[in-house]
Image (tube, rainbow, N blue to C red; front, side, top):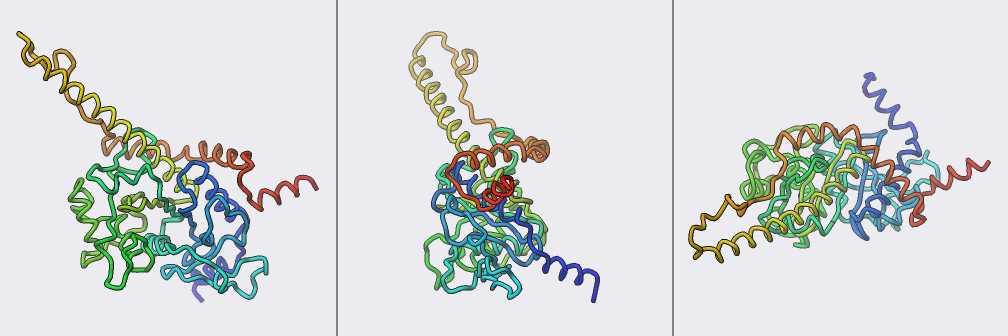
Amino acid sequence: MSPDLAQSLKSASTPIPPTFFSTLITANHILHSQSIVDGYGHISARCPRDPTHFHLSRSLAPALVATRSDILTYHIPSAAPVPRPPSAPSSDPDPAAEHQKHYLERFIHASIYARYPDVQAVVHAHSEAVLPFGITSVPLRATFHMAGVMGGQVPVFDIERHYASGDKHDLLVTNEKLGSALALGFNPEGWASKAGGFIKNLALSQVGMGGKEEEVRYPGNSVVLMRGHGFTAVGASVEEVVYRAIYTVVNARVQRDAVLLQGAWNTGVVGERVTKVGEKGYQGGEKDGMRLEGVKFLSDKETKEAWESNKGQVMRPYGLWVQEVRQSGRYKNEYWEKEGEAAKS
């Protein structure tokens, strides 16, 4: 037996630490408390013992995920439930049991993990703040330093281009083919990855339709918008992907407000110019500060280096978010309760 195989078997047979499940449960609560998810949306994590499996809650509102039995295990890339091993504690859930109800869109997670080995966590959400950027020609771009976490211009995945003849046109990613198409959208290749706006989105719509597939361990884009649906984000850890999802939504709100404010200013400038057209000696424009402007976004260099600086600071706000959900009284986590009982004994 090779050393690598022996190590893999040893890792797979080693119990997953309780902190893994506690962290995943808490992440569900944080995403809800920060209004990234509501009754819909989900977060998953790759299994720390077996990289061919991932963990995702059963079909449940994120705020209500509370116990180990709420967290199920799935195969990569099929998204099929992994039956509970005979040696596992009876308290562990059996994902393959007939009574279990699964998320329809678990294929989002399975396909991303299959394509990118270094992705360790995935968030899918329907935040209203990002929806307009997936259904208009206005691209979502980093507007302030905290938004460096989402990268440069965020690509848009249009599922309509990928339906098979038998698929429901419900915008849901409910099979491996659609999941693979979305996963490829995180790393549009060659010229498409450098193209802007409409061209880049058109290139994304063709991904998985005969184009060359690129082998990468981690995608070039960490966030992808989904037309008429929401967005999906990936990360190197649960904490990172939660941070990324939160600041993607914050950036969408900031950008929307900036565009509205700038639009109002430009409308006023045009109005002033119209009223002064007949005034003798009016030179107009920049001399009196009446210049039409656009929103100033972060450059590619600023976006990249802002994230490089903030990457090491993820745990600062994350620690705050953990305490906020723990102290709120709105959420339950069986591991917190066990900690409390242990402290009393």
